[in-house]
Amino acid sequence: MALGIAAALLGVSAFSTPAAAANDVGITLYGSRAAGWGLTNTTVTSPGPPLTIHVGDNVTLNLTSLDTLAHRWFIDYNGNNVSNGAEPTSPNFGTALLWNFTVSNVTGTFHYRSDRTAGPGDDLATMWGNITILAAQTTPPPLLGGENTVLIVVGVIVIIVAVIAFAAFFWRRMGKPGTPPPPPQ
Image 1 (cartoon, rainbow, N blue to C red):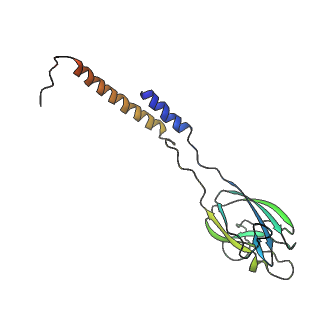
Image 2 (cartoon, rainbow, N blue to C red):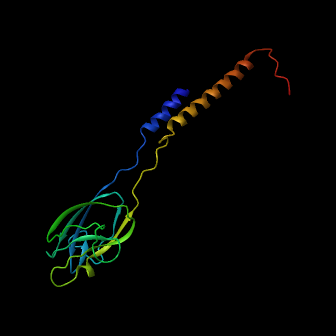
């Protein structure tokens, strides 16, 4: 019986789910200086659609310029309306661009923008939206995961063996006819 319980506990531990790896996130955005950003070419608004990603995600942006003007997508961590070195910033694109980046360890809600100006007009006024970066996604810890699994299994086995030994001792003692009960203390 003890071996069966130990095997079950080890089996649960062996098949438990490890912490989630980074997600691959695909986002398609259509941009226009006159209208803003949209998830489709017919839903372009200012502000653009809210986006949510997690620290560590591998993000693939599929960016399309609807007005054929040069744009450059970026996350404005510090709110200064200019793409800085630590902020994810795409290359310039005038028609379409497929661009990847990994989300750094910065959490909060920020603006995503286009900071390129090509001719009259200003991308900053209309080409923005909110992006929320959440802490890395994790799965709950396994039922018996981590470094203490062996200790837990050994402890359960010791308890089961002790209970069986205790029960066997009293069962044998009670099974002998004519054995007087122990004297009171």
